[in-house]
Amino acid sequence: MVDAMPSPMGSNGGNVQADETYHLNTSPRAKGYIKGQSKTKHAQILALIDEDTGQARTFHIEGGLNASKIQDILFRNVVRKATLVTDEAKLYVEMGKEFADHRTMKHTALESVSKVMKH
Image 1 (cartoon, rainbow, N blue to C red):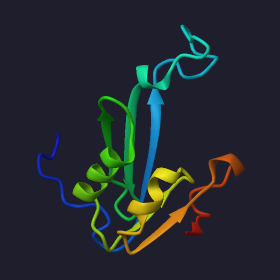
Image 2 (cartoon, rainbow, N blue to C red):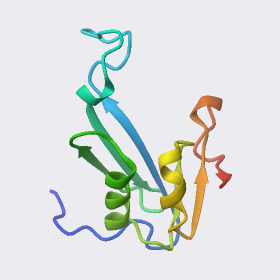
Image 3 (cartoon, rainbow, N blue to C red):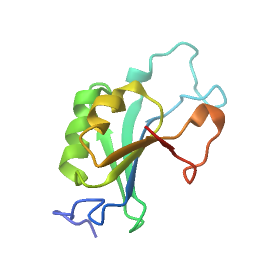
Image 4 (cartoon, rainbow, N blue to C red):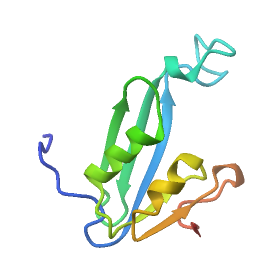
């Protein structure tokens, strides 16, 4: 069952993870992969996970991924007293300042979620 009016994530002041991804043929190993194909042709998804409750939400982003669209989703779904945990993408830097804390993890260093750096 889908909750039409879910409560805000991070209500206890805990960590809320946010990460964006692309779906459909983005890997050279995927069937139908076309080298050099723009990621804007793929489904763009933002996922949020509340570490305290284990609740997850996903959002399909139409018309390209940008900071404005991500900020709108974050501000509607995450309380400002939460700690925002993201990857090192620059689009999170400014909006991260709106939360109690903003921490980053480095995918490139294979850093795990439990080892986040203070931003």
